[in-house]
Length: 193
Image 1: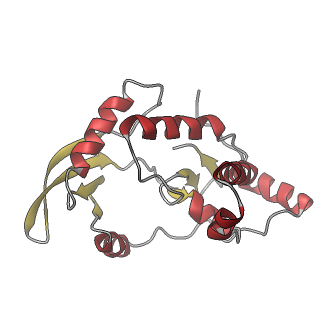
Image 2: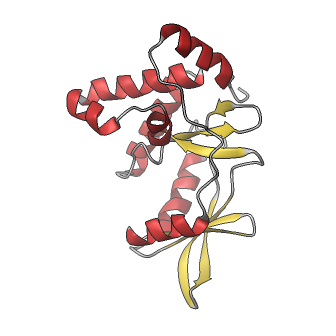
């Protein structure tokens, strides 16, 4: 299957007709500067940066790089299409050597990663408030319904694969800020990761 996409403008028209959603803020927001990302992640004991077209993640808490490389190898044995390849290595940062991993930047020109959290926020939805009002099942259903309505995609199968793989590799760090879609700023379309 090729990439599936729908135009954002068609979705906007549908949302205006049903009057269920607020008009979204500009999805063409600039990707935050790497230094901002580094500062935020350094607080959480993570350092991630781009260098020569590669995304570098440093091990500061243990074996995150090795875990990513093993997860990639496991993904090759599943029905996950085109997993991002991670390779372990040693990297110099702030005049010190660190172990970690690198991957090719999976975004092409005119593409950006849009997390589910960012997409919901851009439509004025308060995830924390929804989470307090709904059961886990209700919350998942609400998020899927929203994402599908806004993007025109059917994300249930993709999301099920992601959750199954997280279970397989014991990933306990899945949240709405690291689940997302690829947004093409030129064609105004969303695609699966």
